[in-house]
Image 1 (cartoon, helix red, strand yellow):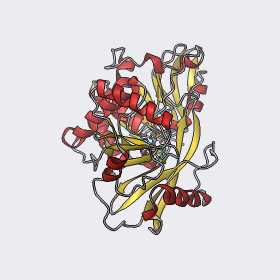
Image 2 (cartoon, protein in one colour; image 1 turned 90 degrees about the vertical axis):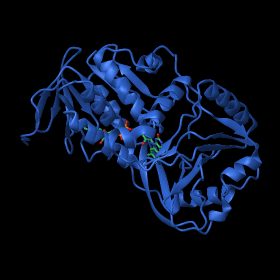
Image 3 (cartoon, helix red, strand yellow; image 1 turned 120 degrees about the vertical axis):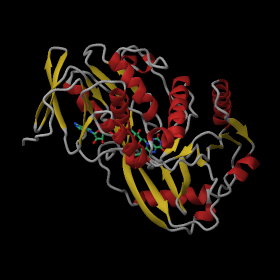
Image 4 (cartoon, protein in one colour; image 1 turned 45 degrees about the vertical axis):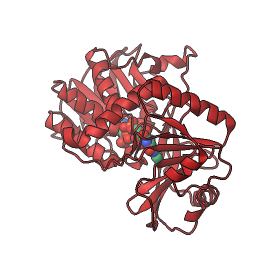
Length: 386
Ligand SMILES: Cc1cc2nc3c(=O)[nH]c(=O)nc-3n(C[C@H](O)[C@H](O)[C@H](O)COP(=O)(O)OP(=O)(O)OC[C@H]3O[C@@H](n4cnc5c(N)ncnc54)[C@H](O)[C@@H]3O)c2cc1C
């Protein structure tokens, strides 16, 4: 299959046109890298990014994640003015509901760390949690953590914004264009194969989300990323819904909700983890969702479900991202394995990828997120995830 728009060579080929690949391409092109090519095998954002609940926050346990996420929040707050693209950012904050004494302890520590780093997170009483998120039934709760910075925005718009800015800065973005392999000479990358031909390049960015392990394999690099299905539902309009309802998470069940138009978006892990690439909806999940609603937000029990979908988290063994330049194949830079919190990391990680490619010092040292941590047993667990 020939494709006249397939470049014969590139300075950098980015594999994956989700938030990570597009943010990276945008930052590379804006930094003056002339021939940046993005290969996306489907539509832009069509992997996990447009399936995301849109939550943006910096409420993590790992200081590196807090730093990356705060940088992303800066970028998202400026997206409309800087990138001429509205992203429907609702700055309603994040509320974690806690019913386990050890979680209260952990979140108290996390909130202190976040405060030290400049994020105004704080522990709140059960009564205040109920005031902040009026749909919540407080029974069994011991406390909550609230972080007023953050909220949710539209992943499709962020994708569009980065794609437009990347193209404007000279990048080539090809959709319906799967990469099918790498042309290697030992540990050197010579090119990226596609069905339409090979693009000669010495530098590849793996931003293939849940599919990254295959891309790593082409280079002989193990990127331990495994797909895990997650589902969300959108409700019918909810009468009297408080537009300031924070992104609310019942931490022990991981049931979450936030406003979506006149209704709510709600999510919950499946009762039994469904590993693999299957993205079909599992009808029994709705029964589990009904149970979670009954438990934590019973006033919603009669609200209808209008729509829903399933998508993939891209899990690593310690639920933390893989970001770095391969120690063996120096032409391979990777940014993947965000374990379900990658949408909010996209803006900052795009900057970091740019710097890794250019050999510049990123705004934060991401060395601890290199894949070699698994060989050294220096894993870096992130605990504030759902
Ligand atoms: C239900 C759900 C809710 C979520 N909610 C949130 C949230 O609230 N906040 C948050 O931060 N994160 C959330 N996430 C996680 C978030 O969606 C991901 O972490 C993030 O989108 C990862 O972005 P990415 O660009 O790395 O991956 P993707 O968006 O998956 O992009 C990777 C792209 O690579 C392409 N690709 C793969 N292989 C090839 C190939 N060989 N050639 C060419 N292209 C290829 C794929 O088609 C895909 O489009 C959620 C995820 C799900 C499923």
